[in-house]
Image (cartoon, rainbow, N blue to C red; front, top):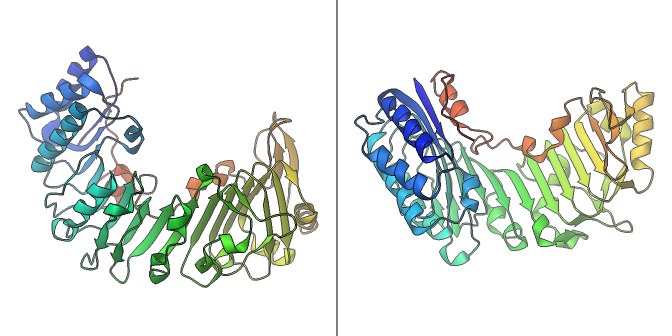
Length: 412
């Protein structure tokens, strides 16, 4: 079993790398093609097409990772990428995992074995590709779609009800004109503007909806009052993860009273550039909660006993505290035997629960348990469809292919 990973490199290294890769093409199981641009990309594409061996045993293919979409492709580069994909699609008929970031993609070939698909497209291409998915991908189990523009003129119709094996659909930046799913399919949504966040289509999909991520920090959008927040989030739902990334959430005089999905989800993340002021009634079901602000944090916690006894994983990040809520919580935890300490920047992060001040100008962080990295928002993802949840190695291991330990081609 062979694996290849190609990054940017000199022409000499590229030729050597392509030769190494193509020798192993016949037995390759995983191929990851990364940061190739300009002539290097075109040379690699031509070398690939002249290979004496095909990639008939390929099970996982990642072509032009999402991060590379930020590089504005020339017409020649776009043609080279499309040429590579077309050729590989004709060879790799046993693909189980596919990650594609293409500027131009008008459709998909029939891939009867494909179980995991990640697409990064423009809206117009998304609409065209969506129209052929049901017939082309009969075995698909997870689907992640990212759209990189917000024009609703080409909003896709995702009519996927006939894809009976589809377990998870994750949409990022996609506001579909219509969406139909198999009864058991879980839906995970990330929106980037208030129009999409408030759109009524999500109400009709509440039985499927498991993750809702409002990511609008770049927009200067503040949820400083309840009427600014999508109202369906204050009602019951099947949501398991709710993440709100906005410029502000609540005010000192009018904190947002959390209810409905805000209390019922297992994982809640509120991340702001401005203040966070919330009121937390009794009855939350959190297993993990993050309140992260670059400024002031105010929490009115009605039932500290329930919060401490349930012991959710949590992190509170702030520059200043408003009110006594957080300090009363730390005192209550100490009284109940939950260890916590103050640390400075020179002390390792090993305490079960602590408030951390990395520097005089940085934010304080209070969290439980000891794994510091858990406060990062991407750790909240449970979609099982994106790159973080479903990398080629995870996908192939889950489908019975041994984990890949072969040497990779790498250049810096």
